[in-house]
Length: 184
Length: 205
Image (cartoon, rainbow over all chains, first blue to last red; front, side, top):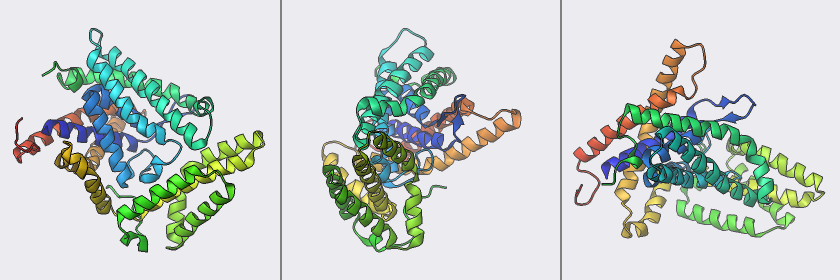
């Protein structure tokens, strides 16, 4: 119990700290933040349930009024805006990413975690994000999707980085991938 | 340092119960979503602007700067509806979005963190009966607030030592050591929590 709470809290804090890092500009001019990398790592390292709880805890603290989203955003307003779907999607993204890492054995961790991050952190996340944007901006799903496709290449890079980082973590701290431990 | 988004300008709204403000926000959001009448949305937007200007220029300016993030979306939607020659629908969408976000920010700006926590506790009570461990939740919230500055400091040190060794800007390379430090901190924190009596009612684990 204490261990779960401590890991969930520390990873929620890490999502915040990754949002404080300066933005990285990709070659083709799309600025990306490391915050969604944190979401992917929550899933790959903590597993489905704890990963989703860490993201929920982070969002709860943002809703309480702390400016922890990248760019110093926070408060209740971000849950009303056009990107609110992405915030809700973060929870599902961490969950799905964690679920895949938990159950897909027999491949190197880097591959599993990268693919899981693409499926959870991009496909699932953008599903939620596009629905949210379509609702707020009153546009069709395809029109809303057109507004966000520019960010997908950056997120694919992040998913691969998340996979490599997860593999490196597993090497540096064997047993640190909570999702991949044998069932107790 | 972690600074909450609560406005330093004290307003009369600071003294209203947080639950009341959140309830009103909920009602206002539903009303905004339900209406497609341009006149209603202009009136709602002007009322929100009026609420922002009541506490003075400094508060208004602070509030408006927080809405800047919406301008790209406003521009895209208006341009879109200019092309489809349906500008009043575009205005409704933009006004609804700006007013909804503005009112939500207004609640955040006029509600202290401790008051928001009290609401969380109140909302959590029925869930606690269903098995939600409120103590774990409260410790979790406190831990995040405590650890963000700590981890942020470590992140800055990692960035600095990277800069000392390399001419290139540190990018995702600092994330691995940062995550390792977070994992180690988590182990220490878990041990400390357990040493102080743990979070389970009967300490079964």
